[in-house]
Amino acid sequence: MLSVLRDRTYRHLFLAQVVALTGTGLATVALALLAYDLAGGRAAAVLGTALALKMAAYVALAPLAGALARRVPRRALLVGADLVRLAAALALPFVDRVWQVYALVLLLQAASAVFTPAFQATIPRVLPEEGDYTRALALSRLAYDLESLASPVLAAALLALVPYGWLFAGTAAGFLLSALLVLPLRLPPDADPGPHGPAAGRVLGVRLLLATPRLRALLALDLAVAAAGALVLVDTVVLVRDGLGRPAGDVSLALAAYGAGSMAVALLLPRLLGRTGDRALMLPASGALAATLGLLSAGLASGWADDHRAAAWPALLALWLVLGAATSAVLTPGGRLLRRSAADADLPGLFAARFSLSHGCWLLTYPLAGWLAFRAGPATSAAALTAVALVAAVCAARLWPRRDPEELEHAHPELPVGHPHMSGPSGTGGGGHRHVHPFRIDALHRHWPTPAG
Image 1 (cartoon, rainbow, N blue to C red):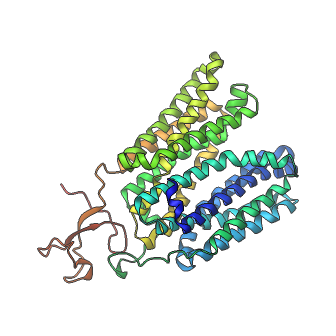
Image 2 (cartoon, rainbow, N blue to C red):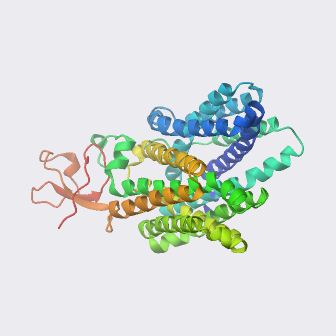
Image 3 (cartoon, rainbow, N blue to C red):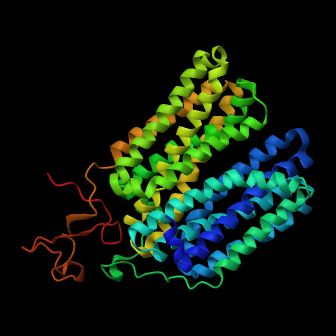
């Protein structure tokens, strides 16, 4: 997996991702403490609103970021977004009003909504070989998991030495290092619209995603992941502290089990995908998410945890381990599907659309997990999220064709004889305007062809 780090450009980009994620993790801890200082007993409400603003920024602004990526050189876009995030992080320690927190969080997350899709769309241009790109996706997933484990530990160590306001300085340092790592790179320029010439044109990322069967399935899979992830991130503290009566430190252990499962699959994924392929791995993993949530829901509804206290804690850790592993198996190959489904010129818009719509799934499941757990109890919350994950997994299986080749035969009855798109060895001849090539939605291919037979 580490062999891709020999590429200097990718190595800089990966290190930029790692330091930026570490800074973001420090900001998460510092923001919680800042909210408590400003709002006291309303700290949870303040944090909940800040989290909603984060998701709203991702959903609303990521598509605009895809359009921006077409007009601004990629390096300037990435560095500029990092500098905006740096400025927001430096300003946070000096706020004294809750609305100022909201404004700065919205600014920081708006810059992240620009940075992240542009960054994701750059990697397949830097590593064009599928094996290298798969290894890069696994490393990226590993970076997210390590951040979720390492940042709280680093924050705790720093808080033993300095006030929490200095954590924002660590956040700013992460964004500054990220910008400095990207600045000297010569990133590949955006490609021409595709192998069929300028007439193929560019299409909106959302349209491309919704018109491609495997990508509609990917969106359903994102919803399954959001259902499981929201339950883990929102309800773990209630299940561990109130449900099992465990100490506060065990909340971190439960989250660590979730991260450990995700890391284990990320390490194995390049080899697994070489044997199974994307569909054969991702669909069963989504089923595992729904099944694991169902087991949790049944255990909570039946009172099993109350009757088996000694076994309930290791059982919860095992469930979280499985949820983390299945989440990684669904999320990590997603970039491969996006890359396979669009011309290079359309990748920024497609990554931005997926980024936006996938976070829209979290915008639905976060309040579902939190409010149902608060109003009706964790068992009801788990049951509702099980239903969401199950429906999403079934929809994904129905939307993703069992036979999903890259090259498809299709017709162009609307094109005149002799059109440049129909020339070349891919035509089937006979004047039927039919030919075969890697099929992607664009200006000349607005609809997915109906399977033959």
